[in-house]
Length: 206
Image (tube, rainbow, N blue to C red; front, side, top):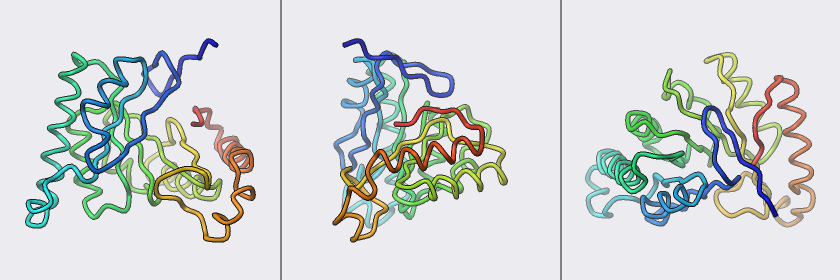
């Protein structure tokens, strides 16, 4: 089977494959760089990179310094090639400084979920970085797109859809998790496509 290339914003990868974030020292430079070398999109997870004791004293500084270190190491392991990105959870208490660190290190994309990344474009500014929200409903996507369009004249460069069968930080009720067929990928895909059509936004759905 021949897999199609994947184009997001201004970069194209050989295979339509995005490595998941996988926090707490799993999705780090070695894994992200290996995925890039294999033809996919490598992702560094921004949560849980630091030493537990050091993080207790200065969580923000520890988190930002180690994220920058991982990004630089991944660039070194790939000879500067990408696309290299960061997964940043909205729920983090240090969300803004982590995003600004990723921007300063010139990542190619930012994936953001575990909440609605309403302020993400503000922290990214004019940097040429693909913004990819993770959503679990068409309603969530519409809230994001409405805010991004009104406040920043920006729309997503791709959208990641998660169903109740996905791992990670899911935006579903207990009832929906008990009956995942009611929020299947087919159902969610239709909702998301309707929202994108409303904003005349043609981007990859992942």
